[in-house]
Length: 93
Image (cartoon, rainbow, N blue to C red; front, side, top):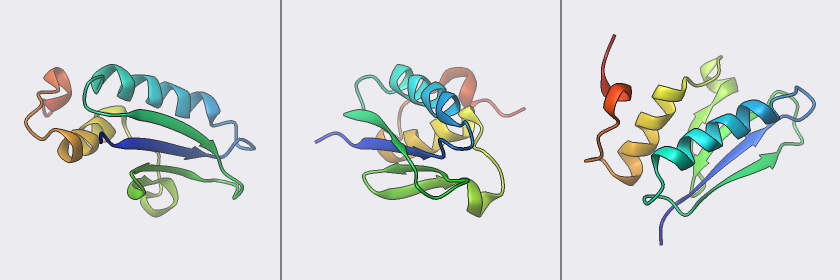
C-alpha cells in the first residue's frame, strides 16, 4: 500500500493554512506515489510535525524552524520514490 503523510499542526498558533498549503504541494508532486496527506490538529501548542506512516520526517520543535517546501519534497521523495525527479526542487542554489 502507498504511504500516508500526516501533518500535525497547532490550530491555536494559526498554522492550519501552512499545513494545508504543504499538503497541496505534496499531493500535487506525489500524485501517484502516496495514498493520502492528512491534516491533524495537535493538542500541544507549537506543534508542527510531518510524518510518513508514523515515522517523523520533520519536527518544527526539534529543528527550531518550519520546513522549506523544497526540503520537505526531497525528504518525501527519498522515502516514496527515490528515482523521481523534482525538477527545479532538485537544483541547489
